[in-house]
Each structure stands twice: as C-alpha cells, then as structure tokens.
Figure 1 (tube, helix red, strand yellow):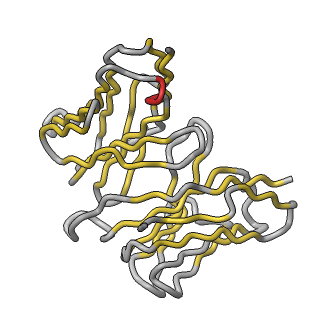
Figure 2 (cartoon, rainbow over the protein chains, first blue to last red):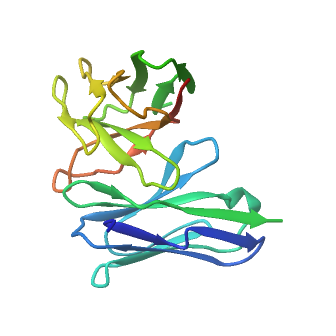
Length: 106
Length: 117
C-alpha cells in the first residue's frame, strides 16, 4: 500500500469547471505539498501546508490533519491548468503520490 | 535568477555504458536529492545529500552512484549495473533535509529523460 493515495488518477473537465483533487496519507507528517508537473516534465511547488487552508489565485489547498486528508481545488479551470498534480508529504522522509492527470478542454 | 539546472534534457545511452547526469543549484540549499519517475508511479528516491561530502542511499540506489564535492553540485551516475535505466530523472534541493530542521520545501529541476538504446 502506498503511503500517499490520490484520486482521481485522471480527470477531464470543461473550461470554467470547479475541480477537486483528493489526497489521503497514512503516515505521520509535518507538512503536505502539492506539486504541478507540466508535459515538459519540470515540477513546480504549488503549496506547502501543515494545517488549515491556503489560497493562491484560483488554487486552494486544504488539509485535515485528523482525517489525514488534503484537497486541491481549482476554480474557473482553464486549459493552461492541464498538468499532472502530485501530492507529497514529509514525515521521516518524502513520500509522493502517483499524481492526478488533469486535462481541461476549451 | 535562483534555481536548479539539469543537463542534458535528453540523453541516449547504449547498453553497458555509464552516463552522468548533471544537477546544479544556486539557491544555497544544504540538501539535494535525486528521484526517478516512471509512468504510473510516484517519484522514487535514489540518493540524497544533506551536506558536502556526505550522501545517503534512497529507496532504489542500486546501479546508481553520486558525489557531493561542492554544495551547489550533485551529479548522478547511472552505471551499467542499473538493469532498467530508461526513465525521467529529477533533481531537487531544499534548505534543510527533514522536518524539525526548519523550512523543507523542495525545489525541482527541469529533469533529464534518459533512454537506453
């Protein structure tokens, strides 16, 4: 069993839709990270959070430490949001989810 | 601009050859990491280094070697002993290695795609 599970694995949305990607983890953590990987392969860190909620533009990340669960929301989705979104946690080491591939259709 | 660079972006290797992937950072980060990414799998840790002249094996170190002679550089050698080296390799760095040591957000390089012919 993976320490970090993401759902869904693949997601297709129409432009403008509200999108939610979920992440559950099974280890004790000090922080959770949401990463974005574009088709070229490079990875960008979107959020690092250990409690509550963070917002950056159209992206919102929440975490529930008691339930060991986090969500990444994208409001008013746009084709340029198409990417793989990876959830990672830092416990005694980094653990990565397998990613959610998002395609936003114009 | 501060960041992490990896070279080359694409690399082709014949079976039986060793090949070295470059990773340089100018963020003044103490910790550096090498990951391997395969389709349908999460990133897997190959090696990491907390300080110069020190490095530790990750989950899949067999067939790989690293060095950390300078703070800003952490090259990865894929040896002929690595049985399935075709993959996407990502280098990352962070200010500190583990939680409890402070800020630990990782910054990633653009990656190197290695193909064995």
